Length: 453
Image (spheres, helix red, strand yellow):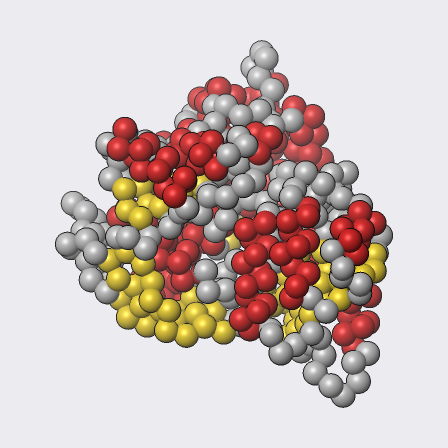
């Protein structure tokens, strides 16, 4: 089967929808020889920040000398972004080979109908085991308790910031959603949590206590002290209140946004608990290596999170697809772009809190171009424009496609004359971000195959 045929096959698995539960994954992994039991892992759940924490954790593990797998979702430009070993994406030929191999297992098992994410999770675990990965950082697709990745037994469980998203699957309240995220907590396995709101914090604390899982909370037990921050990243000091660790001075993380040092602190705590590299010496583990922390974070790369894809003139892409993420983008704009006009290019999925996302981003924008990525669940540009106009925001236009929207924004950016050109800010969905990368000239291959984010 060719790569494109494999991707279309995987796309076809979406006919099975999203089925939360571990039965299919467990059966398929058993048929594949349980590859997930052949490496250690850190398991990451949460609403916002889990991609950043996962990337940072993997980078620190690599800097410590380990062979490291990273499984994340969704992708922006190519499916191969999801599965990496030591920063090398799985190749197209390897995707095709693994799809053929796992498809044979599925076809030979009566009544086994895995979803897209279940199949791809097994593909990632098989790939990691085959390449001799020592550590893997595994990001949940959605939720936690019934997510396909929750089949793993991690060394550390991580829960990033919990917010309202995927209510149709995870629950209507923060408590319900936090309960699903906390479902990754295993008996006796350390848990690291970002600073949470009171409702989520209570659920996570209670679940950790019930499962005798030691809990470390950012802002209470450890955290960052930001030294400086700009469009390109932040410098901060890390400190920990536990008895066997110390502060780490002048850490640099090249990801924009003042929330990234918080994500970095969560990642430091998780990796140090797992391996001992920052002072939490584990029996038989490596000697403490602060250099691995600093080098790993400084070399972290992550697409689609306040990513500057053009610096002159300035174009920024972010996959913010819920209200809390949109507010973080707006806060970033106020902090670093307050003296610049911003042309907002916005495309959102119809099942999101559209009004909340629009209202979060309009106050920092001088102009808004509403669009729709090429996906059936995308909200119509006209409805987005109507919401903006109803709120009193007048400088509105619509574009049928993301490519058209980006072209319009770049044309207006270029027509500013000799003055400082406005910033183009493209956000609202990973679908929108991915198509914008294609519109900016990056190679994209069947990029519409993503989860429902």
